Image (cartoon, rainbow, N blue to C red; front, side, top):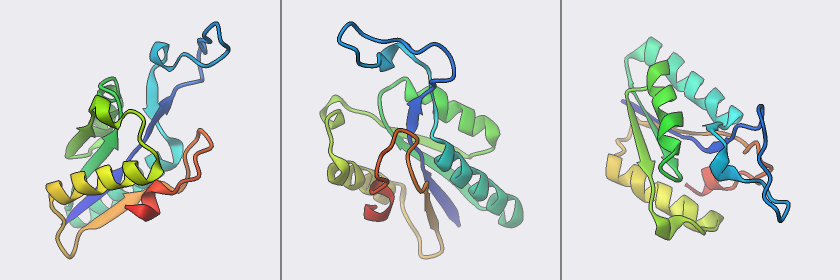
Length: 134
């Protein structure tokens, strides 16, 4: 059995927030962390791992710096991390993002007794449509 957890990296705004001249946030200058609600899903999957011995796989879509966030989840006890990262995906809308992640999950392989966890809402105000669409 596998628990596949979709996670989103968000800017760590607990420290200094860099702002560009045009007034927008400079995300490239900031570290990323796991979205808080997705972290709750990871913790639930890890509890299930403790109870059943299942394998926990975390999947994220984002730029290469998101690897740091995924390494932290591996250190928490997740067994495998998958980063879907390509320039072509950079401007994806919600539907495209969910289709890309669904394809990645399909490639990982899903058996009838596997579970897919998705956080309920993104910390950045996202409408949280990706999880249900996956």
